[in-house]
Image (cartoon, rainbow, N blue to C red; front, side, top):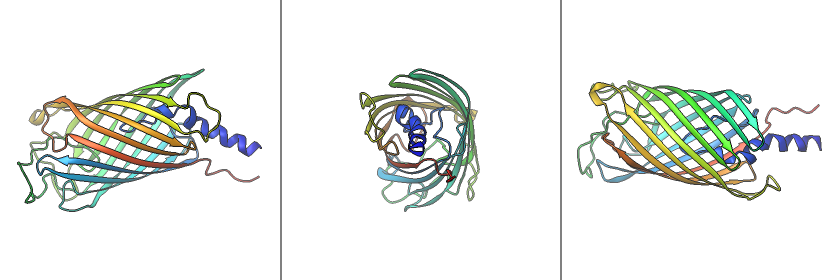
Length: 286
């Protein structure tokens, strides 16, 4: 009975705060301590310069080291910059929650994050026969676009069934392993986001086995800060999410540009994600 109660306590962050499990961003809250998560993200997008559909696969391992610290390790494979699907590199992400203020049915949390990526893609892909216009991409990212580092601050407010989160970060892009960063691309950028999640179902909790249905809307912005390519954009990404048995989640999201003047190779992305978590992995029998 004692072990069962401990299991329920460990699941509470997932059950009660499910509306913080954003699809495009991370909240200030962490996954439960001593937990392990496995995630596979599939992204599908139209590549503007070729007019064909590209895809990226991101297998990911997540580790809740403590209640304040968690780490993600991600692999990347895509056909966005190469003629066929291939391994592109990987990244590591760490988040540390440094502020937590809890109340009944609400809390406020803040966290700091850092991320590093090593990518071996070219910055300009070989033009294939189906190319419809010249490649003129000025958007870089750490998810297959460029090697580099980033860091920032996250603040998340939970109010009963609604969770709102904001992120502000800085990105420094570097040379890829086999290609140098072109002089016309900005090596520095600022990213910012505003995300909201609402727990639609269940109306009231009776068991951790109940299926959760969460709705999300996220605003995702980026601004290049170097004079050679100073421009910006703002995207919107609505999403729907299902959580089963408080341990497995399925996400569907669609991202598209609202406004901006940045030249980009991808303006619209559909995301499908599957994730499973294992809790209390380090418990020992006494």
